[in-house]
Length: 110
Image (cartoon, rainbow, N blue to C red; front, side):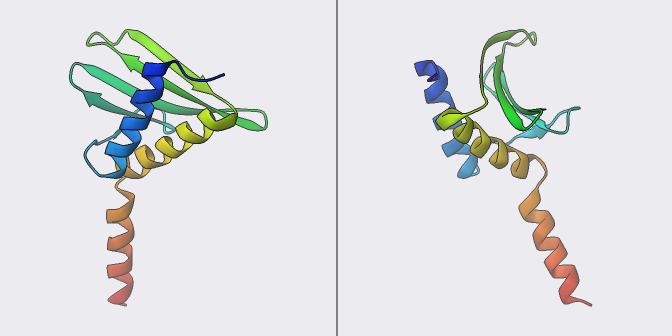
């Protein structure tokens, strides 16, 4: 099932902006869910494991924390797109590139 048009546009734009470093993601209490604030909204993207596959959940919250819209995907193109955005969000929130650079620098001093 295809995403609703506006959710589709949001996923596309957030992926582009995250990849270019213009959107920053943060960790949450759930190690597989990340969030970003955009204007007066918060977007969360999480991965849930169910038996042999993963389900990605994309949520838009208002200023009070109420879910105003959401989408999920466990297969097909939408799963691939959310998985891709989730990986960018994870790497951004955990500062993976900086950590790898620090590790490489440390190894050069051994």
